[in-house]
Length: 201
Image 1 (cartoon, rainbow, N blue to C red):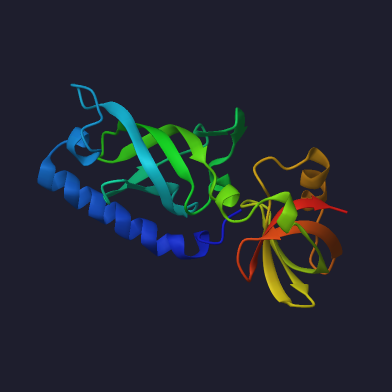
Image 2: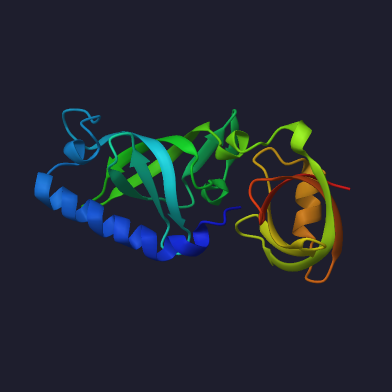
């Protein structure tokens, strides 16, 4: 569902190196995570904004309010919760405000099994009903894993992302999309080339 994932592959690796180096310098998970962990420094939480998501290496980078960025590993057991609903990790978007439950691993890295979305960036980018527009065009490429598809419109190519609270029928329509399909939808422009779906019609 995210456009930043295209640039996250290298970014997350760099962030991980940064976090690993920081761990070597400070010597403790508690210090890396801003002292939020308990006395055993084996678990705690990180609050901040999503900076990158690397689905290939299963790493997410979160920037805390103090400017420090922490790279967290995740897996199929990791839950993302937003407004009491559970989503896959790849539903996260760049800029989402989150709180992640974190534990240390045996290889001096950090793992999260639970991420709560405190504020969705989509709701901060004009995602109100007053800005919903009708868009139509032909599907160019579909990314089923990340909830994205690109389409050619009269105004050029746009990338459409599925929202957190997509209707079941919209999810089914998305899963059935194929390259070349003509689609019509209502969506909100997050920027000139990025649209968040409201519904297909």
